[in-house]
Length: 281
Image (cartoon, rainbow, N blue to C red; front, side):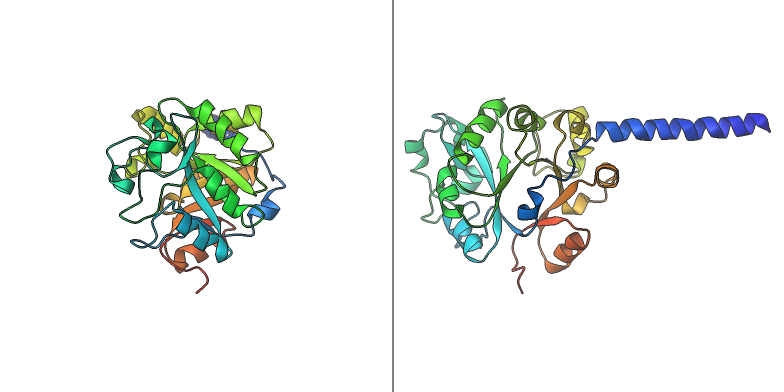
């Protein structure tokens, strides 16, 4: 009988220790005061686009978002000449019909591209910041490429400092968050993630081991994010649940595509990044 009891106690103790170690690996920063501002808004995914007339990440989409009182999420790439382009993919094949990589372009070359068959140019980050200055907030996603994570983070922060815009910064790449943690600890930083083995549309270009670590937020131990931006369809994730339970971290859900999803997310106190419907209706 004593042997059975001792075995059960050992298993329980081992489970507690393993849980505590897991929680340490998922460490988040608590209750950044800036949430009082950021938490008041819903965020239009890549601007409030309405294809085919209004492309994603276009000035028309950002203008529509801010004029209707929404914040916006956008994607930032560092170009060859140091400018910051707002575009989702590194390749411009899908968004602009050009077989080039935005990181290899200069501003002059970028200005020749148009978005999705419209007359809309690919905006620079400074164009969008000027539009949102003194108005609604932005969720700025850092899109690293070819190991430019530090240079991208530094350039983006230098540009953000020039404008009076409320914002937070997120990235799939933990190295971007590590740079922010070291150099700009005042900035609200967030870890983007999803269950990578279920999806290929956000392939991080790394091996399966790293994809497992990213999916389960193990890089939090070095990034200590203020929020977790997790794909809505993957939200029932044990790592996210532990971050919420232990650290009371803010959760952000992407991409919300209808009212029922929005209501489910907001019922849990999550911020929403939406597209393809009108949240006001």
